[in-house]
Length: 155
Image 1 (cartoon, rainbow, N blue to C red):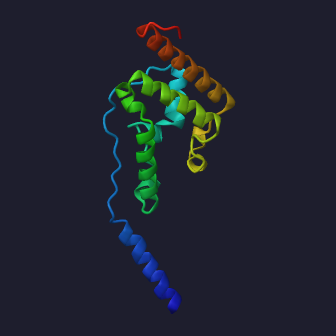
Image 2 (spheres, rainbow, N blue to C red):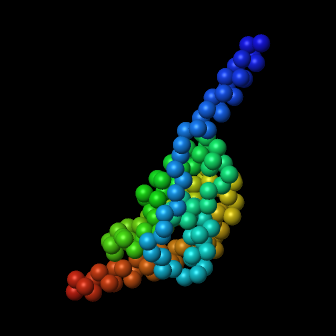
């Protein structure tokens, strides 16, 4: 009898927490990031769910309390780096973000380990990592050269 009451209370709690609203948004992108097609494919597959306004909200993003965690992860991801607002970053900020992208990938911090079991397609191969490293390095060099030329310095 005690078990039935406990299970009934737990079920009621699970049902009630579904009523707690969570906001899943995908605002319009405010500019595309210019990247080679191969890099765009990697970013779209492995990064955009948390770092853009093109999040694909899976079914479990609609079931509390998991939905709260998913929305929180996407919100934090967008705050750290948002490819949909890349055009709003100045060159210095873009350089920082590019350095951060490579550092997080190189150290195995991105994509998040908790994300990968349900999103195996997001796992980065060595070829993906090489492409990202080459892209971030080249883009950083372009930014540094542009900054140096506007300041009359040697990059």
